[in-house]
Image (cartoon, rainbow, N blue to C red; front, side, top):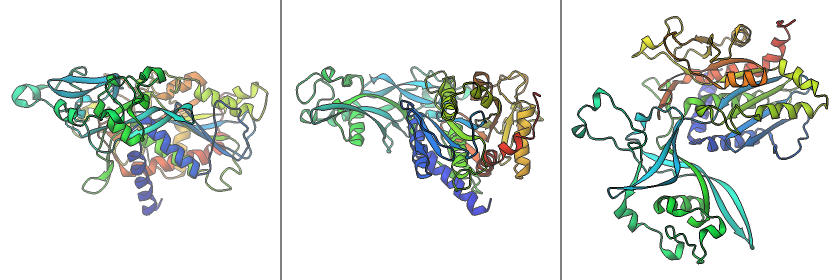
Amino acid sequence: MAKEESYDVVSDLISFLNASPTAFHAVDEAKKRLLIAGFVQLSEREVWNLESGKKYFFTRNYSTIVAFAIGQRYVAGNGFHLVGAHTDSPCLKLKPVSKVVKGGILEVGVQTYGGGLWHTWFDRDLTVAGRVIVREEKEGSVSYSHRLVRIEEPIMRIPTLAIHLDRGVNDGFKVNTQTHLLPILATSLKAELNKVSPENGSVESGKRSDGTQENDKTGTDNTKHHSLLLQLLTSKLGCKPDDICDFELQACDTQPSIVAGAAKEFIFSGRLDNLFMSFCSLKALIDATSSDSSLKEETGVRMVALFDHEECGSDSAQGAGSPVILNALSRITNSFSSDSKLFDKGIQRSFLVSADMAHALHPNYMDKHEENHQPRLHGGLVIKLNANQRYATNAVTSFIFREIASKHNLPVQDFVVRNDMPCGSTIGPILASGLGIRTVDVGAPQLSMHSIREMCAVDDVKYSYEHFKAFFQEFSHLDAKITVDI
């Protein structure tokens, strides 16, 4: 890849990150890119009429997205070549009743999502983003729309306690996530001055401007949330506070993702885990299917699946533990044949790249890595192995991924966790055990994983993108040469 092309990929990643403060926004951004690239949106509620040589995608809960391109030579029973990643990251999500007032200060009640480094959320300029269910009335007919919202400016902050009031803080900063991790929104005095006037719709009384109770029209109980917060949301949505029926919002850092470092070799950003892998896999699929001839000789189905809820175990209707991929693979197969036996055949010809960020060697904590397995920044994708199946990689799947890298002169690294440390996991073992699909676990190296502000290297962006793209282009040909269960 030329230097200018490499810069373009990095710049594109930065744009993707800055457009994706939440899983909902990440799916929305992915959807926009797929539509521009000629992918056709499907609905899981409808019958699918699929054709070979065509490209499709669907969303579930608007926080998981699955895209696929069917080879022109595909027949039912052929394999699926899948890269899986996730759209979610550790964060603070607003509670169902977020209104908290203490000491004349308006705070926002939040719950922790995933295993975040919560001390990094202190003294950051925060805002909120997510989705809102909005009640709409037109010509006497009521409907409910799903709307994404993002307040761009900083509106909240979690201040640390001054050292003068906690002299031992530098001996160990322990966060009580229930009492210490509440963002400050405003003072009661200033919030009262900014309250919406009655003629514009009450935000505290529980009554609408037309005099009816909000429960009469299934509106949200606005006493659950600060009126000032609701005002900010409605100004973005162009609706009245009483028209907000419910929402899923989270606190977000307002500092944008950037290319940084003295040599401009790093990316400083939130949510690199795992939007980095989501972006690279998505762009690889789009670019590997962009020309008229891309799918001409393809016998399989090239796919990307970006799941929600990986950070809390994947057990949801839209997580990797759900039937979402099983359903998709089955529906694709059945679109080309009614023979149910062909689905099982297709699974055994399939391959999953489970793509989730990896731990780069930290120069200040080098003893945390096993000495023979120390992934470096700029070192390319990391193949993760664990004898106890916390990662799903084996010798066959590792070889396939390495062979693709070798053919394209791409660097590859290895990682195993120290024997005296616990090992994390990914969607790899979940899908491998649930589907019976061959799987390799990989990820780009990064530092500060699960911090509000993470970092990685720019070279690993191009390596990851190129590796995934080569996987889509090369796998069918390579797999035909491999013999195992015969």
